[in-house]
Length: 160
Image (tube, rainbow, N blue to C red; front, side):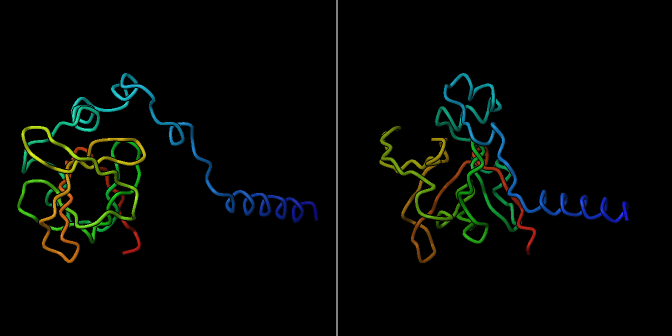
């Protein structure tokens, strides 16, 4: 009988532990608050693009020809930005998407640098520079979110 009671205790404990939502860590909850902290968190190239609004060379990014199903995330904070089914080949040299995963995850700001009129896109959560959005996309949205691969991470969709 003692072993049966022990079994019930272990089973109840395991069931209770498995039913709890995973607790987020301090690293997930708190983003860097200074550029020095960002510089320590990111690689040199990631810092240049995400924090200093740089651009990777065209046709060099790891996600340009990427075709896996899943979610493209912000490299700075992990926020899901685009679903793989919104990605298309625009022949511009950078990964392109026709819509954000949901309204509000990307912030749009006028960008008049380099003598051009463009719309810069940044992650709404951490402010990381992603690229630009243009109104010349070939799909029904008419949009082309042109994004630096360095600004992105990827979460594979294991359901497909």
